[in-house]
Amino acid sequence: MSLIPFVVVWAVLATAVLVLAIYRMRIAGRTDELLHVQEAEASLVYQQAEVAKKLDVIDRWGKILTVVVAATGVILAVLFLYDSWLRSNSVGA
Image (cartoon, helix red, strand yellow):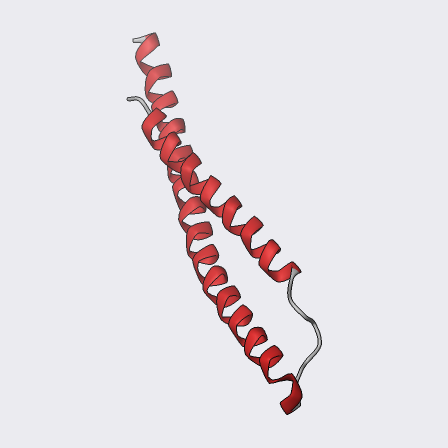
């Protein structure tokens, strides 16, 4: 049984998580940490709200993809160990 296609899919998912994390860091790095509440700063309040919405979406997808990558990695590890065990038993027979 060849696990290479599954490993490739896992690597693509893991890369997507990494790219999403880098993208989040870039967006979060440009945020203004001050809380703007005055009317004169209304455009800044809107901008902060938009950045917060973007970060929420990125965080949601990041969590989902991280769980998928972790679960897929565990399944691949179990399949690899099972395949290795089967091969070691068939060599001696």
